[in-house]
Image (cartoon, rainbow, N blue to C red):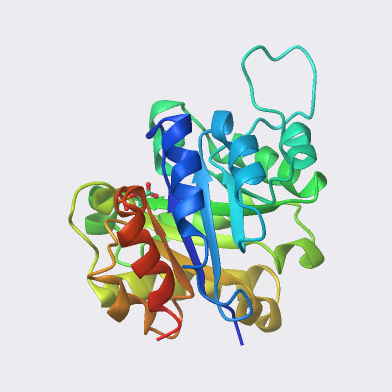
Length: 252
Ligand code: PEP
């Protein structure tokens, strides 16, 4: 039985004060962590304060990105080793905004996945799909190639803990959610790819999320689908009430 995973991605939003207040407001409002895991990915600048202020709250603090080397002369980069030392447990890798605005290739993403695993954290690998690709590839094969390339050289032991998010970029921040069938189709395809790359057992074990204009109002149907184990929410994770509603939906 896969445990639902509800994640917020704040991107480059909120202030440090907002982030700390938000985390405190989640207190006593999150679902039982034995039933659902809840995470927030935030700017690296906020993570330490969020960890310090979350207290006993079962909130996973995630980074939105990191570099693929642990340390060295890489001015301005975020060390995965430092994230891990700080108490960060999950890192989003390969978000479509990183692929688009920061030219992250599958090769770079693969190196980052290895860096996250090497530092004992869990990668949340995002797979993108553009509207153009969707129209030209009936089987959304771009997603398959991104999962395959992103996980190159990753062992079965590590693969089973990885979280993969199906995030069509035409649905991100646009208010245009994929239909529930489309969301499930993408998540199913990712699970099939994991079966091909690893085994049926691993494919059944890993959690696959859908992301793209998810809100507490449209997530219930998405979360009810067999191959969708949770959501990655950007815009709607910035409002504490919406995020608490979203986090509690999957336990209903
Ligand atoms: C995201 O940034 O991963 C995302 C899904 O954003 P939004 O929910 O705003 O579409």
